[in-house]
Length: 466
Image 1: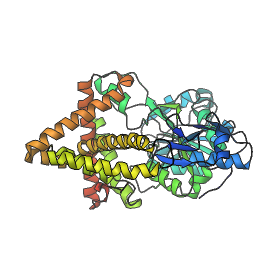
Image 2 (image 1 turned 30 degrees about the vertical axis):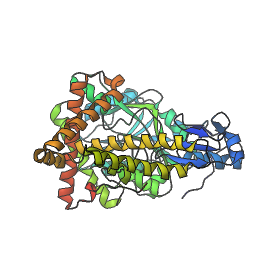
Image 3 (image 1 turned 90 degrees about the vertical axis):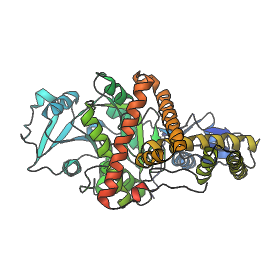
């Protein structure tokens, strides 16, 4: 693990979803949720929810808050944009490259032509307003190899990777650069938004639920957190950190960005998702290419499970939640009783965790309910996404399973529509239909990848005892 001190002037803000108890000495929140006990002196430093680093003690408290996931960084210092080289991997997309270069102003740009049919020509500096260099691969080696070539050629402390089908929005770089005033941050990613206005219903759905868009909430990027990885379509990285990890895995044609994030995390680096920075992406909105891309993403899980055993379960739900759902799902008197006993036992165990707080039973009941419904949502989603072939077979064999599965599929889709209803404006019927097709495509890719790898590791769920 790294132990570099946060600089003076660096600030952290307690996440608004975190709850404080016992005069601020106990914080509950983060992802995954945890309970953090602070010494009275540390709690006093936080005050109204903001802590500025002014000395070694405050730096230690700030680091603990960040690493616990209960606070977000508020850096005040940032490196110079002149210390950034933009690397663009490219294969047969000259129009996208021209559009991207037109959006960049005054940057040093390395375009890695990965075996395009027509070699890329260096645009004039007057036309692009940037200093552009082109590296050429005579044959296609893949986006990971292209990014690594640009990484090795860069001479600056920081490198921004931008795919040729994206366009950065104003201020994108400065917003992300500030995070690197934390010397332990290796990678920062912006929010990926839609480039073009919605042209059809599928475009409106993809605008809302693109696989590249990780949402509005800032977060640490952690394999066990709410944001488990960030896509390589747009990244800003500390060059020496990636060089130490030998960059992207060039043997991977998909999920190489996930692999990179997890290797950096394992090496002790911190990673951040910064949704205040926007980079627009030219989404696929023709049904065939859209469905194929979702399927392609699913095939990456098998390679990840081989490189990171146990880190990519399609479903992770506490065992007590699974047991309670199964018992309630029997729709019998004994099943209902068993489900209530299971919930009661979990409540008793959770109450011990909150011992010493005011009204621990009430607090435990609140977090138990949240955990149960979150687990139920994950089960419903996995049933329709990762395990849809199994669900389909079970539906054909049992009328009761068919009724429950259809109900859960509709409920899951409507809940997802309700959560994202302000983003795309798509009616619930078409939204749910596209959501189910999205899940079928990804799930098909997941099973296809497992078949090709001759391994079921990427299909195994985990049920921790908590």
